[in-house]
Amino acid sequence: MIAVTGANGLLGSFVIRKLYEANVPVVAIKRNNSDTSLLADLNTLTWRTADILDPISLQEALEGVSGVIHCAAMVSFNPRDEKKLMQVNVEGTKNVVDACHVSGVTRLLHVSSVAALGRQKNQTHISESNMWIDSPYNTMYGQSKYKAELEVFRGQEEGLKTIIINPSVILSRGNWDRSSAQLFKYVWRQRPFYSEGSFNYVDVRDVANQIHQLFFSEFEGERFISNAGSITIKDFFQKLAVLLNKKAPAIKVSKPVLKVLALAELWRSYLTGSTPLITRETARGADTHFSYSSDKIKKALRCEFQTIDQTLGWCAEFYRKQMELKN
Image (cartoon, rainbow, N blue to C red; front, side, top):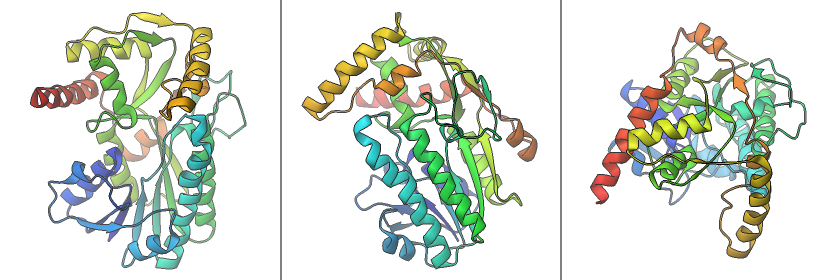
């Protein structure tokens, strides 16, 4: 039996569906009172409640489980979330590794991020062999995922069979108030601004398929980048705007202006308790152009990736229909 942490999230829900459709006995792990609407149609799915910050509940949830796919994580670039990021991503992963040992789990697939590979100013192309070096181009989130990987490496040394997948920005259908899906909401609302720079992307369906293949493969003690390609922020918004029949952001905001806005947003967030729309970290990386190599996973799994047009078309169709239903 395979357990999936963060099963109710964007990626976790697709991983669950992949296992479910393959008739693999699966346990979906969620926190108490979590929204499970993404998997509401799977009536026979087994749910267990646990918190990765509660070792006892986690051990109980892994009873009778032979393998774990660890999707649960926190993504934030808000400076106020630094402590929580470390708790959820680092301490939470430590607890998952420890619970695997206690519960007799033999295999763990950890969902990390390309952010855990680290970035430096003069780098343009990054692979799995990249060594982490502290740098202003690394985010708090990246640090937390890097330290989480160290816990997985510890588990490997202690006898647990582990494997790590490092996705780039995952594009998906789902709740557009969460994760990268907020990009679709931004264009739908016809926000006017965009920045220089680019980002790396991957289709959630590709990541879920690769997780399934890697978990049941002979690979062990390795990590694999999952990245379909890179695109400028301007081009991304323009493509998406056409698909959603909306006006694309047309006002380019320079990096110095973004830094000023980030400071203003920080004060606004402190006063209102809301999440800042721009942070110092996102402003710092606004004009960067990093790319990540997916050669290793392509060769290992003999797989290809959805193109950006295929992914955006698939996602946009879903969000258009969602808005039509609301209207």
